[in-house]
Image (cartoon, rainbow, N blue to C red):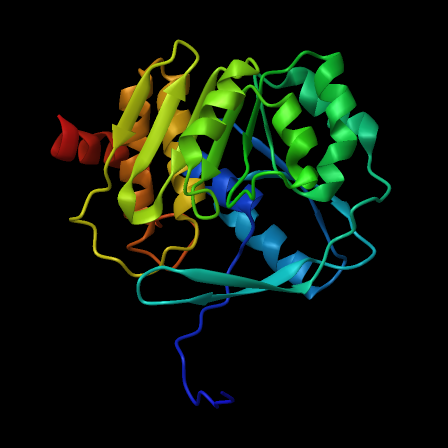
Length: 272
């Protein structure tokens, strides 16, 4: 039924999965370089300014179609509908020499499921890099994701469109993946290791919900922070849970005051 909504809370801010992870990792003092494509427009300028303010090492190529933008419609329960206002180019000229150097020097690569990044997969294979990918609300059988699934060693995914998630996690582990983590929003997260160990982590109910945008990227970043410090899978899941919990108390992609000390203190508070 047609309706007119005269007022709804509105926030314009930096978006996208790559930016979300880069912001969190930068705040957690994890050295990271973000590559993306942006337009030579006012939105591209705002993105560069925001990432520079928080110290993200941002490398970009210009997209002739302009900066990709989307609107997220959020329910009070955290449910989301994303509407893409503009779409980035799936194929465009990249400075591949510069990107090749970044890949060559990287300890690991987080490959975002943006169409243009498929151009980089041959370089990842050439340099035998460990690849992490976040499939988000993956629809089983969607061929778009096949290239990302094939190249990934570590897979993160949401169960939003995959209620029967365990068989898919088992399938990916059988294909040689080192770890699969499936997040369930308010129902926590599940991990399956390559030695067939299942792990479950609930959310932390004490964090007061304000905005769920960026929570998945925060969870991923908190987990990666723990992993890189030699934490166990169980500990890393809990660090991811804390990082996501802090994120939902903020309207930004990453909790404004996030830092390693705060993350460790919150971990001890809830799990110590």
